[in-house]
Amino acid sequence: MSELPSLHVRVWRGTPEAGDYAAYEVPRYESQTVLDVVSWIQQHLDGALAYRYACRVGMCGSCAMTVNGVPRWTCRTHVGKVAEDGNLEIGPLANFPVIRDLAVDMDPFFEKWVKAGGVFHAGATRDDPVAEIDPAAETRQIADAGIECINCAVCYAACDTVAGNPDYLGPAALNRAWTLLNDAKDTGRAAILEAVTGDGGCHSCHTMGSCAAHCPNGLNPLESIAGLKRAAARSFFGKGS
Amino acid sequence: MIRPHRRHPLWFAFILHRVSGLALALFLPAHFLMLGSVLEGAAALDAGLAWTDNLLAKIAEFGLVFLLAVHLFGGLRLMALEFLPWSPAQKTMAAASVALAVLVSGGFFLQAV
Amino acid sequence: MGEMRLYMAQRLSALVMAPLVLGHVAVMIYAVQGGLSAAEILGRTAGSVGWVLFYGLFALAVAVHAAIGLRTILREWAGLGGLVLNAAALAIFALLLAMGWRAVWAVTFSAGAAAAAAGGGA
Image (cartoon, rainbow over all chains, first blue to last red; front, top):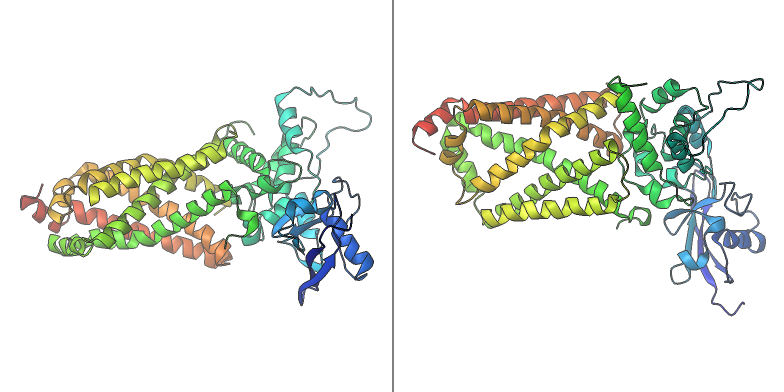
């Protein structure tokens, strides 16, 4: 096991005011994930290292970091897949304010999720019968294609438009809006369309596709945003709402 | 150096579209000024044209035609992506835009030299 | 102006320009053979209502398209915003339109163009 050569790991340490990468030597194991590496450093070398994780199995979306320049979910990223000659550089997610070390402030991300109309617009109460949804319906299939988002913010960190335009809602929020727009149970169609066509909405996207290229769940926010643009255009020219 | 998260075909298509658009926009005033020089007589335009009659200028013109063609075909690809039902062949379409632009600007260059 | 209106104007001007660019490139490839001269260019364009309409529309569309495109670049790469950003975009639009239409006029109905065309350039 421990005959494998050890890893040379550089980890971002710092506060919003000042910081730098610190170097650590970490033993290499089979089937080791990047999150394992970060946890090993925190448990054996520096207990003060700040980072965030919860489920460790790719469900909760809280452990995303920048690994060798690419945003990734660290719990399901194998070291063998991303280490370059035994080197790992681990930093906080880009496009977020850093709280400390590898922990970023996710508030702007979730605020934009709400701003994009991402909160379900209920039209029925508990007294109404359960809505019948045909799983084969076209809109349901479209909604299903985007619904497995875990809000890890990898797409948001990968997007250069987010970096250049602080008002841009970003791929995850717009993808969420697109799934709600196609949800037969959601009654907020007009509200969603208004939310995603304002300043920083779907029209700010330049289809550079880094969201789809890096989404760990294989979702395609680029396709969702293109769908929003089409829905907005139809509404703009008065066909349907 | 191109940062690691940008190394994929659609990002290259994006940066090509933006840089070509920027370069064309910066070239336009010079283009308009030269044609506008006819207001001072056709001789003024001939003087301008003589200034561009060398291999370096021809290569620059080839570059401009390439940028125009790649912005056109890249833009058509973009609008197809936005307005037509989603097609998974985005990488192929991005590559085809560049290939068509090479063809058009290459045709221009062969006629120019 | 709202982002959506700018987006629509950007796409509309692009759709208008797509055939015009193809025509422009075709004319360029044809005209550049054997070198360019003022007499040759003006022989084609002088007094032509067709070319005035073609390039007049082209210059209008490109002024709209370039102003919106540069507005985006100024916002994302230069960090401009608010009134400054919109004023800059409007100035770019006005400048490109004025320069473009001036050039179209120069090669079609100006005295210089008429003189060159009368001088036998074709």
